[in-house]
Image (cartoon, one colour):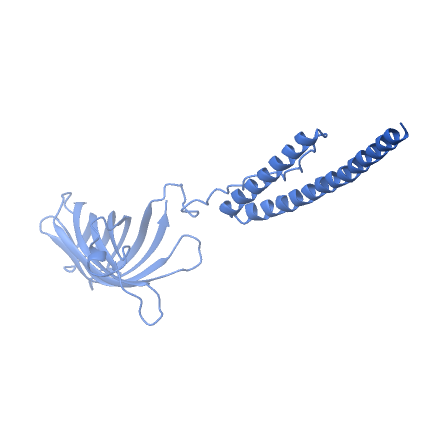
Length: 271
């Protein structure tokens, strides 16, 4: 009887000792899992900020596997569940900033490139020895890509279409009045000696829609060379040109014609 009691006491002591040791080991395992999960969370946040998507996915998989093993251990030992470490919040998406308008200096927001110019045509006759002229043009891009075909930049070639007016004395000392329609092609020259792409040449034809003698026609021509510079007035570049022009009008009783050297000043304006 005494031997049975002694064996029972020994068995109870061993069971209590084993439970105490195992409980301490389980607590240590819980603390280790929590510490490991915190390390993984820190790595996930760093990988996400660095846009390392593959590394982020792998770290999340490691975290999920660790939680699964821990939950399985808890279930087998019937212990209270351990709350997972908090996941860092996802940062808000970046704020999208709208781009500035393509032409912030456009007067009416249309984005049309125009050119306004005034010129003096020397004929050697009259009070001012010639005629005064002005024109307003719409500047068009090179639709056919001709500049690119010859190795120039795509915007090197431009076209101008516009209306103008001429008033003065022609080469026969006769009054000339004309409203011509102008069509020009303008070629910007390649950069020379660090001076920038500011020099250009141009030329075209004109046709008098209404003029001396209250009739239309005939045709005239113009050719010129010039350069562009920014005068700081906030409207774009200003052009200075020297050329040769011929403007004709069907006068009465004979044709009137103004031709000679011309000096022009033009201003780019974006509508």
